[in-house]
Amino acid sequence: MVTMLEVRDLRVRYGAIEAVRGIDLTLRQGELVALVGSNGAGKSTLLKALAGILRPVSGSIVFDGEEIAKFPAHRVASRGIVLVPEGRRLFADQTVLDNLLLGAYRRRNAYRQARPHDRVEEHLDRFPVLRERRDRPAGTLSGGQQQMLAISRGLMAQPRLLLLDEPSLGLAPLLVRQIFDTIDELRRRGMTILLVEQMAKLALRRITRLRTAGADTCVAEQTLLALEANLKRLQKHRDWLQGDDSVVDQTG
Ligand SMILES: Nc1ncnc2c1ncn2[C@@H]1O[C@H](COP(=O)(O)OP(=O)(O)O)[C@@H](O)[C@H]1O
Ligand SMILES: [Mg+2]
Image 1 (cartoon, protein in one colour):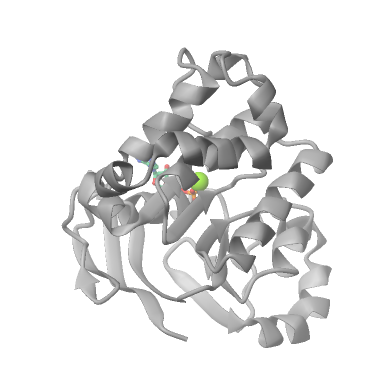
Image 2 (image 1 turned 90 degrees about the horizontal axis):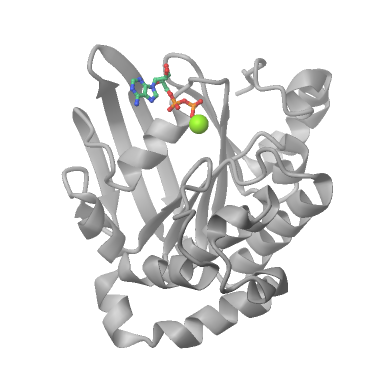
């Protein structure tokens, strides 16, 4: 498989706080890689750095052979890296439709080339509940509907690499299922996805590889096969499998 993203020794700080301490990560085209780790391990910070929202203090991010670590967010977006952030970050006062159209603006070239209104239809077909609410303010949607909208808005930017930050957080099981069905659909279409997810059981069935992020740095990178071999052991960490992220997998 072709390497799409190559992160080397990435460090990101908030003033004195070093949130990401020398992380390495490789993503090949078409892969779904899950990143797990305890609260505060730096997962969201890593995704923000990959999306160009935070500028790393050092290290390298090579995407499609191009060094992008110093790119501002709009240039990163123009290369096809899209972040669906933790907590959705929708424009609550804007309608569902406007939120979707704003997603298209994030990738200016794509916006000019493809007709965004046609793509809106595609996303409204995927989540009919959004079609029913297309003219309502996003702030009036339920948590699950907001997550569907946040993912759809991200997809409006036509990502090549989709970064999903805890998409199932706070959702009822049926909605979690729907979010994962969407992830499955995107994978079948060949999208490359980096997923931060505490619903480990659901994620484990799908991913090609798993990364664990510890307090200091990433501790493991495993193939799915290795993971399956370790599943028994992982299942002992029942708290972790149930989504309590206080236990970090130390296998590998
Ligand atoms: N805006 C911020 N300002 C200062 N510190 C932050 C900020 N955001 C996160 N942090 C700190 O950086 C570390 C990593 O946070 P985060 O990336 O959100 O972790 P995770 O997503 O893995 O839970 C934590 O110690 C957190 O308190
Ligand atoms: Mg986070």
